Amino acid sequence: MLLHSNRQATLPEDLEAPTVDSMTTGQTAYIVPWGMWVDADRQCWLHPKYSIKDRPDGSVEMRIKLTRDGFHVWVPPGATWSPEKEPSYVSPADTKYIPVVKLHR
Image 1 (cartoon, rainbow, N blue to C red):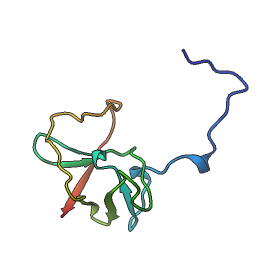
Image 2 (cartoon, rainbow, N blue to C red; image 1 turned 135 degrees about the vertical axis):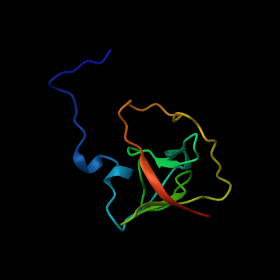
Image 3 (cartoon, rainbow, N blue to C red; image 1 turned 45 degrees about the vertical axis):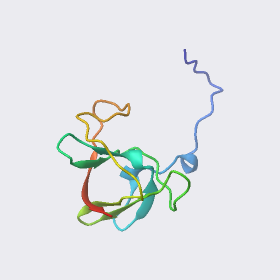
């Protein structure tokens, strides 16, 4: 049970993690490989709310770049995906996944 009170902390905006959907054209970032979903038709999608980093760090190793034509993804060594009818991670039903326009190997 969640309790709310007048004494509850609020996250300052400068501590909020940037996400895929906050990227601007020309920006390069890194996410975890499972931030990309491959549907049953083998089409690739990015989860809009996955956190991004400005450099690789541990499992945050998949490079993404937003260009004028959309998102490009660089596949990390050894990464694989299994096409799935539905994303395997829990997200609201109205999540608008972002199409990947090009995979780079």
